[in-house]
Length: 106
Image (cartoon, rainbow, N blue to C red; front, side, top):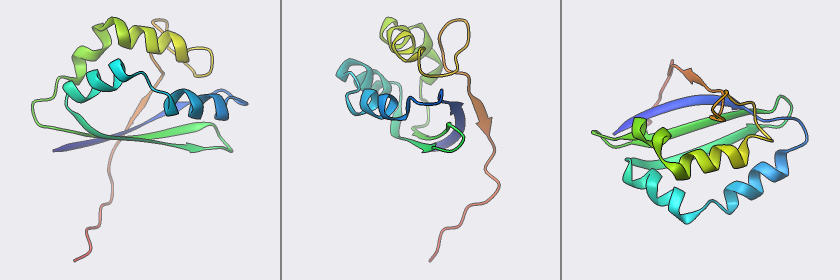
């Protein structure tokens, strides 16, 4: 299992809209994320800064990189583009994070 973390940026005033849209995530998209190898995906919000902190746990041999070509992914990005900072293709601007500490208590 592989774990990655990254940040994204939410536009000010759209905190509730972001949560609502994710509470109602499309079943087809959720299925595609699972089929690509994502087994756990959590997103946290720092309401003061609008920073979204995401953590994904992926299986070995995942196909995450192929998601960006799927019509459902492009549709989701377009759906979210009005409330997030995005790239020209509507994908969220994201910054990968490096794990600098992990503790597994015994």
